View 1 (cartoon, rainbow, N blue to C red):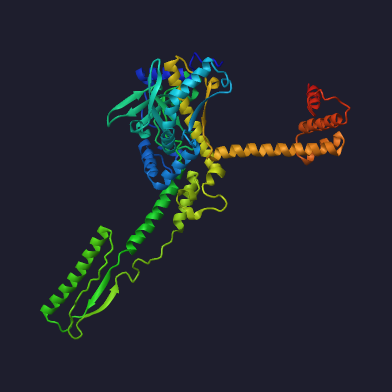
View 2: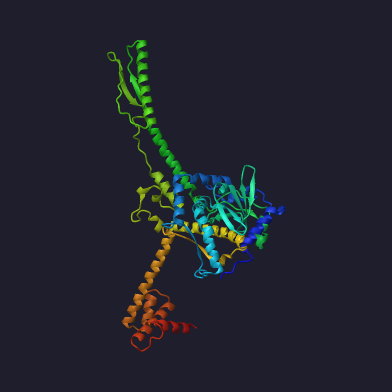
Length: 528
C-alpha cells in the first residue's frame, strides 16, 4: 500500500507561503514595477530583439487573443487539442483515472478504494474541462480553474470560464512553485486566491517571450539565496503559448490576404463613361436628353440593388427608349478602368508561402487547415495525425501540463476529504488519455511493433545458427559484427546456441526449462 505524504511536501509549502504572502506587511516582500537599467538599456530590451521588442503583459495577451479568433489559428489549436486528448469511441471520455502499478489488482485495500472514489468524483469533472482548459493553455500558455471544495467532501466543481480568463489572472511564484493568484474583477478591483482555491495549467516555457518585467527590489539577493523558502515571491511571466512563434508568419499572411482582397474589391468596380453627341441641340433638348439618360441609369442601379438585397434573380427584360434626332445619339461607351472590370489577374503564391510558414510555426500540416488542394500524396485523410513528429511533440506538451493540472485538483480533493495529499512519486493512481487518433500514440505503437519485429528476426537468426553447427567463436563474431550486437549480448546468445545444440543432441537433460536457460545462468555466474 502506498503511504500518503503526511507532510504534504511542496503543496503544503506552497499553501503556507500563499497564506503568509496574503497577510504579509514585510516591505522587502512587496513587488514594485520597475526594471534594472544600465546606461538606458533595460533587461527586457536586451532579452528582446529588433523584431520582437519587449511588450507589456496586456499587449502580448491582446495579440494572442486576436490571433486565436482567426479561423486558421483556431482550427490549428483545436486540432492540437483533439489529437492530444483523443476520445473514446463510444463514451467520448478523454481522461481516465486508473490505479497505479502498485495499487492495481489489490481489491479492497484503502488505496484502491481511494482511486475508485477519485474516478467517481473527479472523472466526470476532468472530462468536462479537459478540452477548454487545454485550448486556453495552448492559446495563452496558462489556463486556470476555480476549484470549489468542501471539508470532508472534497472537490465538488471546477469553473473554467470567463471569470478566470487567463489575461485576468496573474499567478505568483516562489522559485518554480505557484503560491498564489491575483484575479482582476474590475478596473480597480483585484482578488487574491490561494492554491487551494485555484488550479493552474502551466505550459513549459521553451521560448522566452520578450516582455516588460516586474522585479522585486532584492532580485540580486534572490539569485544568491540557497534556501528556497526564503526566495521572494515574484509574478509569473507570460510564455508557453503555441502562438508565440507564429506572430510574424500570421501578420505576413494577413497582409498578403488583405492585399488580394483589396485588389479584388477595386477590380469589382465596373464604371463606364457614356459619350453623348449634343451638337445642334437646343438648350431644352440637351436638358431633356441628359435627364432621360440619368433617370435610365438611376433606375437600372436601383433595380440591381433591390435584386442583390432580395437575393433573387430578375427574370424579366427591361427596355429603355431614348429618342434620337438625325445623328443626335449616344455615340460611344468606354470603361473608366481600361476594360479590366472583374477579370483582373491575381497571384496567391505569396499567400500560400506565408500560410506554409504559419502552419510550420503552429506545428500543423497546411492541408489540415483548409488548404486541401495542397494535400501531400500518401498520407490520406487525417494521415498527418499519425505520422507527424510535430503533432506528437505538441501532444506530449499538452498532456504533460494537463496531467499536472489534474494532479493539482486531486491534491485539493484529498486534502479536504482525507486530510493529506500524496507524494508525487507515490500516487496510487495515474492519469491516462485515450489517444488512439494521436501521433504520439501512433509513434509508441510503431516503436513497440518495430521492437517486436526485430526480436522475431533475431530469434530466427539464432535458430539458423544453431542448425548450421558453427563453433561458438564463429557465432560470437557473426552476432557482434554482422548483426551489430554488443559483445556481452553476442556472448550470451552464443552460449545459448551451444546449450541448445547440446540439448538437441541429448547430451544434456532438459531440467533447465528450455534451451538457453542454462547458458544464461552460466553467463550470470561468470559475471559474478
